[in-house]
Image (cartoon, rainbow, N blue to C red):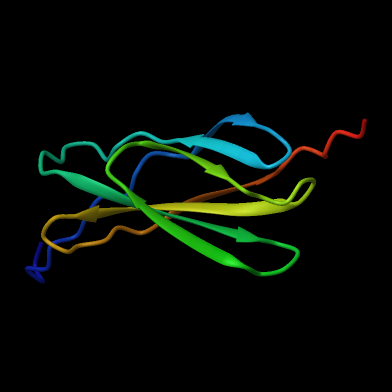
Amino acid sequence: MSSGRYVVSPPGQIKILSVTHDAVFLSWDPPEGLTESLRFRVTWKCESTGDLLCSEVPVTNLCIQGLTPGVKYEFTVATISDSGGQSTSVSTTHATGKASSF
């Protein structure tokens, strides 16, 4: 790299493993070729309210709970290295299931 800046590779595409009325379980592949320990910044934005939340995790999956039933969310994941670099984000959108009525 000519600039000398350290750039972190982005994670693999986000996969939706399961969805309930108030939770979404996400998974993604780690970036290829990186050997240092990594963290991932996961953000989720409610499309109806614009509320944005974030979590940093040291693993390649996250179950996000407490979501609003029947609402679409945008999920993004970025790689964060121990040296402070951050990758570009990968993203996907998905709606939670509708709440069950008894």
